[in-house]
Image (cartoon, rainbow, N blue to C red; front, side, top):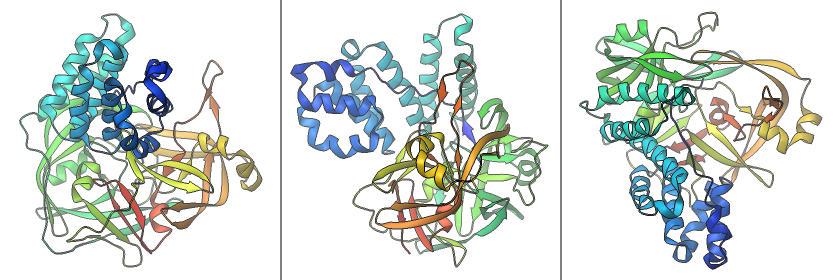
Length: 438
């Protein structure tokens, strides 16, 4: 399940001027190339050794982009302020892109007052004609959302100093599984899907929100999932997950979190998103014991981070000698690879995959049908350890109405089977790593 809030995110692709100036040297050329090709993981690894050789505008830009993708949102905004000092050199398009990046940073930090300021600035920059209709509608929705939140406290997590054990149900769901945790509010207990693909707020149906006593504070918040629709904005003063107390939780409240005509036995009416999960810190999933463990003391993170942020959380792994990047979305019952993966590994997919068939995936607002081929298994290496996923569907390429090919930006969506393919895994959305322990 993908539940996405509407965000305008324009990453700059116009820094080639620096890459083309001989006086900028090889370091400028290399960083310009990495930014233009969206090679953020490589940029993160190489920037420390190149930064002293970069021109000041390009260094500020690289720092802003790198901090954003590493989930260091405050550092990213400080660098964006620095980028603003070089507006004449970088140009209006780059500055506009950085304003959009700052908006995502502020939202991730729950700094709604600053986010509202960026929204108002972006609204004032839009043309008055119909060409900006969608952008204006999105920004006006954000304005309602952020205005309602400016006087509200941010999410607060209180937990014991000892290890916290949270029982989790691995519930069969169609061809895959969901991870279900119990959330308690007063005497009410509600099943929540543990969903690393649900961003910026949690998600809940209207009937479940009424059961838990969620207060509605705004209407008409534009949400995009498979399709788009409107939800209400609600807050809950306090809820409990095991021995963890979570205060000031924000919810998108909709009549249905999947379309009415989609029947799924055992589907929950509520979703726990990264709005909370990131603040839990390090999480260990032990499949055999069916539990999540929040350790009292953090373990050592891998030497190299293997996750990055791009409005969603992404995990990097290896497929042979090739790096594969997938959205980390435990709301998806199974991993599904993209048309980009198909183009990269076409021969393998066609040799091992079955016949082309129609595949359905659902989420807020509707159902998406795609032509897919299913490979009997796919092997990936995370860190130094390999895992095998069974029956992995691969999207076939499609075309826009004008005949131009549409290829997804990343290699797919890693679902719950990524976790359950091994006995014990640890991940941390703050420190941005995913590790196979056993």
